[in-house]
Length: 296
Image (cartoon, rainbow, N blue to C red; front, side):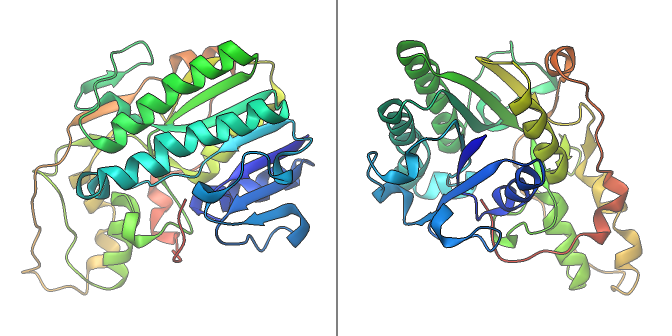
């Protein structure tokens, strides 16, 4: 299958390109930074907001996987215009390119941020009530995808990623797993937002890529799926898992608190009915992760 990935040079995109190449697909990348995994003729290096929807990079593709986005919730508060442009507007542009070129499958990386502040298990049928510009941008993007695909006969999958972590995550936009690991390696205080009892559903990037790989091969279309592990862990417990890395720190190290988000994790029941589900990445292996400077 000929697959175009937007944001293929980012954190998730880098892992996904390698996975799909190993699966035997013909992969193309649309990003402002080249991927070392692909030859130049399979890449379009440009600020994606500037791409012409009639560009030849869209020619003869079977599927678009749209990962490119501004991924930071805090930044979306500081610059909601940029968040809208790099999330909702960009999604509309890529959808328009899919329509113009007759591309028949569109896979979108959405986010658990569409749910806003929830407690307990969150299913796809629960109300989406985003409490950040980023979450709202993702939700509006989902609505555009559903409308476009219904009007123009494009099959879609909307994947609501929960807290993704793994090798290559940019510290600037890192979730708590990556942020804790980096701080521990530097012997710096671990910063917890809130009281530390907020729960998260952490999923390894390799598991995300595994799910996408399997969904591409299945005849599953026009669905929204949560992608997490279905298990929750508090930030305080996540900190405890880093204790071996912290033994050289002073006893007086500070934990800083700031109110941020709430208590929920994802239901994988809907996904499990369509596709076998068995997380491969374990949280107790997090201290092995190393990080570079690039993210999606």
